[in-house]
Image (cartoon, rainbow over all chains, first blue to last red; front, top):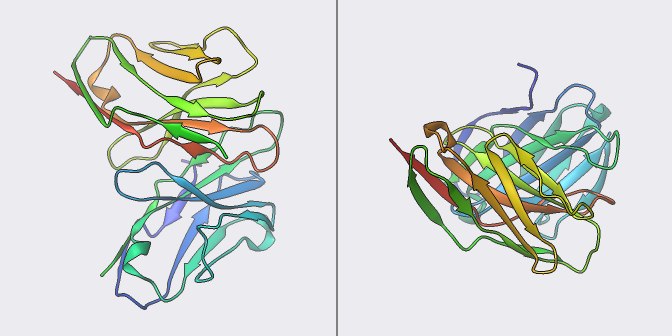
Length: 115
Length: 115
């Protein structure tokens, strides 16, 4: 299966700890997106990369959040000093810009629980 | 800013029945895309159907069809001959074709198909 993969699938941490998630997009997809989905809600956009450049960040992305995509391949999302409000599913998606419409393919998500 | 609203948190129908999920949206854009995504339990989100705003003809994909009413800003999904595998969360989403092409999701509708 060459779809979008995310690691870990589940993460339980204590408040105040740092966590890092990884997303591996579909090979050769130049865009990579991060979304956050809280219980009972639809996903919300956090940030996206085109190749290695982070081009847009949502105001939802506080200073405690940082994302990187070195070399335009996999991406990491780090949350420092986690808070209980950070508990959510973190979804990654990738797309290839080849026309007007570029379908985003989603990974299975990383479910974060902050105790 | 765009908003997407799904007013049906949960729906339940019998297998083989037809079901319609509702979605309304708000935007000042004239050109955009609308989508229905399916998120099965513990599985990744997949694209069910898309509609381009400049196309008057409603999109159809096998058992899935939409009723796109641009003036009313309404975008409903009809599932015909429902199957047990259709059980999932369904999200309506909006996207501007320019720039980030980030998805704006509704709150979701939990659809259960009963045998």
